[in-house]
Image (cartoon, rainbow, N blue to C red; front, side, top):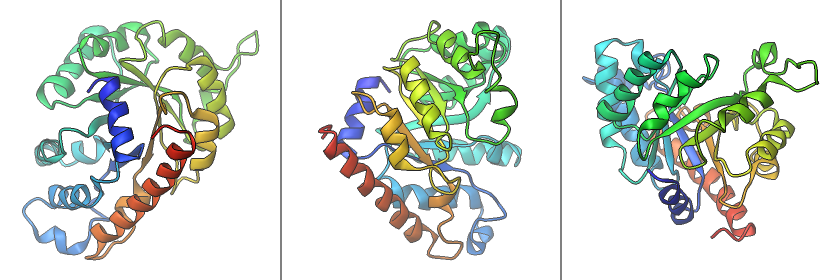
Amino acid sequence: MTRAELILQIQNKKSFLCVGLDPDMGKIPQHLLETEDPVFEFNKAIIDATKDFCVAYKPNIAFYECLGTKGWDSLEKTLNYIPKDIFTIADAKRGDIGNTSTYYAKTFFEYLQFDSITIAPYMGEDSVSPFLAFEGKWAIVLGLTSNKGALDFQMLRDGEGRELFTQVIRKTQNWGTPENLMFVVGATRSEDIAAVRNLAPDSFFLVPGVGAQGGSLEDVVRYGWNKDCGLLVNSSRGIIYASGGEDFAAAAQTEARKIQQEMELVLTAKKFI
């Protein structure tokens, strides 16, 4: 999916919501565990319930890999079920030497046909650039994450007082363009989003941490908005596990609709729609 197509989806859906598809076998409603493929049945119901309110889906690959070949089958069926006009993100956090990254890219871009993949940039340009070689595909580089351990390295300062995450943003922008490179920017450090936006004014941000992790949509918009919206705000647990009963899909729909309505107000106020 191109940048222009993504922007059009945001305008048409009046939403910049991304729904995380993280099927935890310990949280999937009991009645689905009796089906042949509980993971796919869960995802299918969530997609049916939320597809009118989101512009992206983000399966976290760990929830599928841990199930072996059956998990990969469930992932492939899920990906094929997602409507083609919705942006897809493989939350895989890959990042290895060039030749290995090339094969990771082939896996997620050619075999599975994802639109994008999250990338850990620690090993440098040759670990990221293979993902940028695929036309119409995106690398989403970990820039500033929302987890507690982010403080261990991302906030370390060099001799000139520059945080490591700011150097990552500066450097990686030289490897791609705003047409094929995004950044993961966590919602729980809202004021730091402004620092990333200053460094990457034209880039899209994938923003986890809103909802169950405590991030604020209002703050994300205040600090992260750009002329093209520039935001994909992810919610996983707050939507897909809004209920653990047989009404889980209806509860997910209610939560997704609520967030979409908040986003519509933002887009209207910004004169984006």
